Length: 91
Image (cartoon, rainbow, N blue to C red; front, side):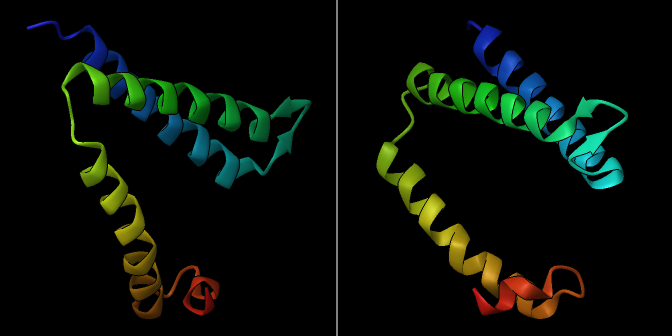
């Protein structure tokens, strides 16, 4: 089994996590470093790898779309119960 695509996808997930953490910690810009642009770049790379993984493993696009849509409703329900990001409850 060719594991290059899943391994790189995992790596990109970790890089998005790191970029989000830096954005939260330091804000969109810190000491001349553009955390917002870096995060956007990492998200783009992850989106590419997720699409590649979808094709590589022949994942069902309808199930992916369903999961995408269901997450919006689930996030609102989570926000109603969470002390962080209460502004999502009104979304």
